[in-house]
Image (cartoon, rainbow, N blue to C red):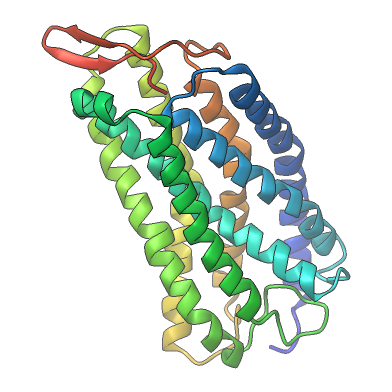
Length: 307
């Protein structure tokens, strides 16, 4: 497949252009608003606040790369901005998937410990630990992103960016793709899908506004994971297995091509939906936080507004 077919070019134009434009406009408003609120308005920050700030930063970086992708698809998949910007924007696009889900996993683990082991959480609860964990996420992700950016192929096809790879180019991409899928996608997703239902069941019997707020943020993260991330992971896994098994050009199968593009559009929606997560995290549907306190009610401990 030396060139993209007319169907593929038109499919990308009519799918990605409106979806990315919508994500860029509303996502930028939501994430910049969240950064302003959590950084400037909240004086006493909890660990979850630290993770939310980092998640909003990752989403904002992704959103600033979207206009280049929008232009690319509106211009019939012709990249005019040069190889360096292709590498930077393309890497940021895919790195956002793994960085975002990493910080959502951090929020998940933080909520799990706070709910299931409240006394341990009170001992561990400090922003220095959260800042250390966040720094580790950025260092590991940044090192992987830099290595990928410097060594990955772009495409042998003229004016294309991050698609249409030949089998030879794919052999260089395969180790990155497999490692990122396992350690950056499947394992963090498993943590979220296992821990959060446990937390939800644990607080189901608590009848107060704090528990209701906790359940909302739990359901929000589960919904984002199931809607945005899980379909992409599953389709990407199928795609990786098919490429490892068969010696053929990328996207030579129209069904896989359509599914991959649809799930790429879905995964970009996480930057649009994350502000809803920030909104729930403030509690009681108001952009404010209460101080953490430990209550005991009918033998069940709960962390009050620990988000």
